[in-house]
Amino acid sequence: MSIDCGVYAMEIPDNIESALTQELCANGFMCELRPDTNILEYMDTGPWFKLGRFPAIHRISPETPLLVGFGLEAVDMRGITDPQRIAEIHEEARGLKYEFCFRTAAGRIDIHLAMQFVCAAALAKVTRGFLVNGQDDLLVPANTAMEYVLREIRDCLHDDGAIPFIEWPPISFDDELNYEFPAPIRSGQAR
Image (cartoon, rainbow, N blue to C red; front, side, top):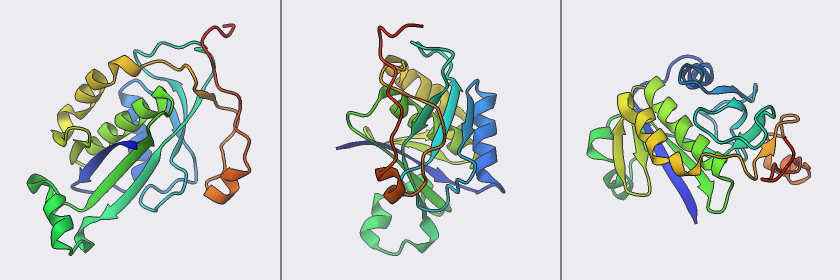
């Protein structure tokens, strides 16, 4: 089982990765996106963020940057021809350019889930699109998406179990299988 959300994008800005990071920073999130990330291409393991500040989060180890990632796939909606698949697209979003599908496996660390939804809200804003909450199939306009997301994730805002950032992990799934992630942050850990 996975926890998913999505974005229907009206336009794709030049250097969408930079626009996404700038939007996150404008909302108080101190973060960096892995430098070689292209969110328009399918990624086995990414995107990965180095997260320094997440507003309203309870930090066990506030001075430690976190390594946060989730699944993301970009789908060019202009190439969708299957009638059943077209019927699954919200009527308000038909005719838009891209659909971004964000996924986090159930049981993953709360900060990954929270960052997934925050990134979706920021991406909705920079693409002038809509956020889709996959759990209740709700379509949220870009101008209210961040407020909606922060309200929805307020109960999972802590970093217990998060991975501290030491270095960027491999971008290839095959390489990641052999990558040793740092030990997670745990409550009760010395500050």
